[in-house]
Image 1 (cartoon, rainbow, N blue to C red):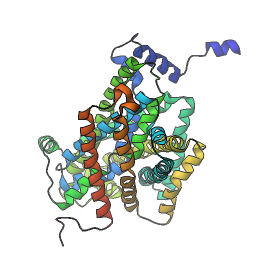
Image 2 (tube, rainbow, N blue to C red):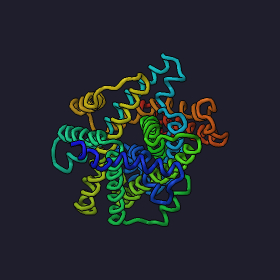
Image 3 (cartoon, helix red, strand yellow):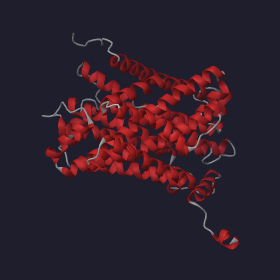
Image 4 (tube, rainbow, N blue to C red):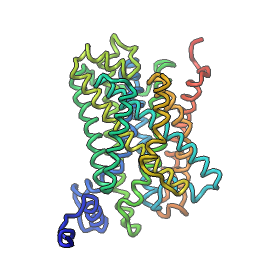
Length: 437
């Protein structure tokens, strides 16, 4: 038995760690080495392709055609910046954002941030479970509650990959991301697209009316997710331990490359969602604003194949984002209050409100909107904390942000937080400037 154990090949995770350490020490290089470091940003990118993005992007494309593509690109650039800062915090400190908050803030602040973050985790799971459930219920012709149960069960099964180490789970989530991207690549070949107009609107900022402003708020204000900011720092803190500042610099370069590539792919998927909705719905079906309506309208317009691909991407989005959201919730709890709960209990706690909402008969779209408002309320704390911490030399050492980076991060935070405030006010019924009487 001992001989068999010795001869047993190393796990995927162990092989990844060894290859990464060789690269960090300068013993190996090349393009192939970059794949060893790929994983954390890919997992974080799932938050930018979750069912909430489906809803806002479909509405943007259906009602305003290509007119809001520039908003999608702006949101993606902001996401790149904050995910890169989150990863840098984990690399430089060896701690995740929640742990640094616990070290730096007073206990009342820490406990308040934890409570708000737990509520945000529940809101996240609500949106993600609903997305997967809508897809499964439409695909299998079953009630929404049955679809939610199936989504919860499958996503819990995916989480079991983590028992084999970080690499199998990274590869599983990466496969879902690839599937979502492939689905939207197929969709682009099934809808008529005016690429000249799309390219023009992607780089030409313009808001047509108050309605376009509200949708733009939904796209940007609900794009940067609290759990993704917490998660990325935690995924980096112990994945590939760097032994000195030179290795940390190399690790940071690999991380930044991955963030740009992974978030660029997520951005292209969001662009494809808007382009698909613009091509399929803008002329003749501009009233389409819900996921279910989009599916039911796609079938007669482009055929069952296109509608089926749309559902497949939605199911992949719901399953992968729900899995990653549960991981983030566990990490947040451990970081803020220093303890973990069994994974099944964590899953049960965060998804319970979603089942209650559906059981009470609330509409899926209304529930999605509500979840985005809750996330908007929870977002300021991690964004502001991340900017503060990554700008401090006593925390980050030589990796503290430059003045330019701090300025860009502060400006991006002001944009996102202002739009979040606008979204909350609009949802609560406050009168909007320029709105008709």
